[in-house]
Image (cartoon, rainbow, N blue to C red; front, side, top):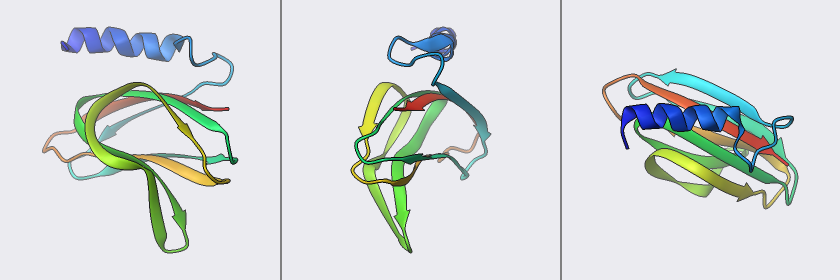
Length: 118
């Protein structure tokens, strides 16, 4: 996928895909330094659904996790990706969850995210 096409696709994401209503969507963007992480965290109740999409210029490690004391659980295991176009995660328990990206490259990587919890 070319960089220009990705920019156009991201513009479509931010302007609102059909699966995300304009009133409830949230956006986030970051420039992630080499070896650093970026998190977007939110509370979810049992059965609520997180709908999300994101795009970056390079592959990054991505996961969804939550903390229970000193333990960290990963309902969406870490995997290498530059984008997710329309994913849905359903909370299996009521608590705080975080989407996390880690930049394994030696360059700053821009990231753009659109999501909602419903």
